[in-house]
Image (cartoon, rainbow, N blue to C red; front, side):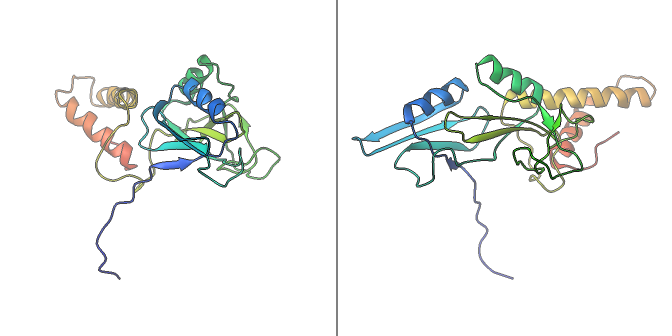
Length: 215
């Protein structure tokens, strides 16, 4: 046991290795990510920072900012609440992205490795289970990104405070709460629930914290 004070360690930056800085900048601009910085010092050093929409973490790349080989960053995850919509949005921007896939009970195979192993099953998870549907794409150097659909967090995965990174994520949570509340009203006789705001709030907080959902 230690008496060390509590300190928050908030992950904020991932450095990705690229060979052509301007080409990489054009690609991440095409993704629709926010350009935060583009600093240079002569021909010896340059650093560019982008932030994905709704993300608290950013990526950095440039010249002489990492010793890693270009394209060696793999397994970079982008969490989304709707995998089909997220993939469609990237496709509309002209980004080449693979088909949606999911993991199964078999983890060995010949596919490109990801969090569930080396076997990828076609299509989204049949039950649309949280954490189980993916789609992958790469930047021009081959740095590998994966979309992962998460709608309900595992217990203890998030703090008690409920927050959303974008209006779209909040709207999606409200739609799930509305659908669940509609089923709740049917089970309770079909009468209008005047306390629906409290029910919605309880549902959304418990969903995000990975706790048992109200019925």
